[in-house]
Length: 215
Image (cartoon, rainbow, N blue to C red; front, top):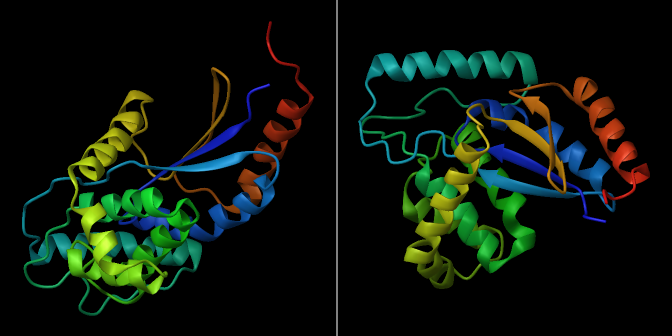
């Protein structure tokens, strides 16, 4: 029987994914020993090169206030996305992919560390030096992480994450897709609170556990 997988499509610089963080942690606990939870970096704004203007910063912070109001997650608004900031989410996504290659257990901690640095502390996590510091704070060797992060292999692996999201038609982050074999079921398309998601996840886990393999 194929082990069930809960695919989590997200971007570390997506504010609703940041708001979704506590929900995902609870669902990961629910899935322990019952299903694998795999993070796919969707690529919110990969390769963006435009410097943000004051009006765009204001519009994005308006969304942040909405996320804070609904989820209770802390945000730092003063000084966030300062002068010259370019909202390119590819480096942050690639940093998570690099962590995955070096330490599979560090994927979700790195994802969370980037979120906290960006949203709570106001750091520019598009910068390589900021991402290396976060990896080091999680126990990684700095030069080894930097070498992996800047390698062509990690560039290609990160693009493969983006392509998987596009291939499955994922356009909204966060998204949760449950899979066993060739069967896929969307459990969440956009932010949902734990109270709404947990019954559907439990039904999927219970059903799959009781369903014999096809053929």
